[in-house]
Image (tube, rainbow, N blue to C red):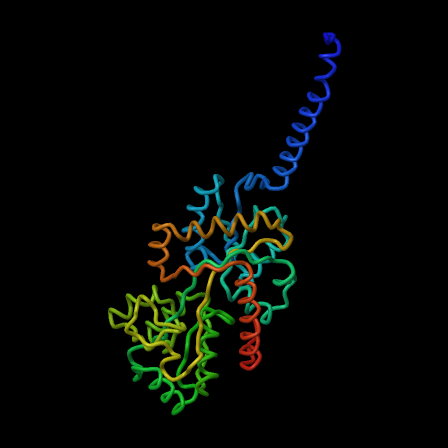
Amino acid sequence: MKMSMHHAVASKRPHQWLALTVTSVIGSLAAISQGYSAEPPYPTRPVRLLVPFAPGGGSDTLARILSARLSEQMGQTWVIDNRGGAGGNLAAETVARSSPDGHTVFIALSTVITVNPTLYKLPFSVEKDLHAVVMLAGAQYILVVHPSVPAKTVTDLVNLAKQKPNALNYASGGVGTPLHLAAELLKKGAGIQMTHVAYKGGSPAAASVLAGETQVLFGSVAASMPHIKSGKLRALATTGSKRAKGVPELPTIAESGYPGFEVATWYGLLVPAKTSPMIVDRLYREALKALEHPEVQKAMAAQGLEPEPGDSATMAARIKSETAMWAGVIREAGIQAR
C-alpha cells in the first residue's frame, strides 16, 4: 500500500514540533540560569578608597600598597581619598552616606570603628550604616622609654611609677588613639599613675620622648626600631598576644606579668550597609588575592604590618568585642574627646 506524499509530510510534523519545543525550553532554562548566576559588572568606574587620616600614616601606607595591586587585578583605578578629621569619623561618615554600589570603600584603622562609637557622639552607626568586608593586616606596638629612665623591663617601669605616682609623662598621638589607650590599659592593669601628654600625631609624640620632654611611649615598631638601635630609645616590651617578628627577643607585656594584655590595631575594608552581597564577595576575594602577592607582603613587612585576613563575620565579631572592651577602658579612665 502506497502512502501519499501529503500523509508522509504530515506524519513528521509532530516530531519536529516536539524537537523545537524541547530545544526552546532548554534554551530558556539556560538563559534563566545564566541570569541568576552571572555577576553584575563591577567595578564600572574608578573605586574611591577613603583613608581616615592624612598621608603618611599606617592607614595611608597600607591603602597605597593595596590600591596599586587592586587596580591591576580589577581593571579599574583605585583612587586614594585622604579624609582626615574628627578622629577618622569624617571618612567613616562619608562612606556610610555613600551609594552602596561598591565604588566607595573605607580602609579603617580598628580604633576608628571600635573606640570612636564610645568616645564621640557619632552622626551614623558603625553597626547599622557600615558593612564589614575583610580584615587585612594587624600591627602591634612597642613600649619604649627615654634612656634617662632607670627601667629595663616592664616590672622596673611599674615599680618606678608606683614609687613616684604621676612623675612619669607618657606621650600619645592624641586622645583616644591606640598609643593613648595602650598606656591607659597598662595603668589599669598595673595599678599605676602616669601623666598623659597628647600630641597631634604619633610622630610628634615620638619626637617628645626622643627629646626627653616626655619619658614613656607606646610607639610603632617600624618607626621606633632605628631609635632603639641607635640607643636614643630603650625598648621594654611589645603589646601583642605573641612576640613581634621584627623584635623576637623582646617579651610581650603579657609575658612580663600582665596576662591577657593585648593592644594590636588592625586594618579592614568596609562599605555602605546595603551593598550587594555579590560586590562584597568580590571585594573580599580580590583583597585576599592582593594580600597573597609577594610584593604586597614585602611592602607590608617593611612597615611592621602582618597579613591578618579575616572574612566579614570574623571582622564584625571583632568589632563588637573590641568596642565593648574599649568602652570599659574609656569609662574607667574618664577619657573624653577634646
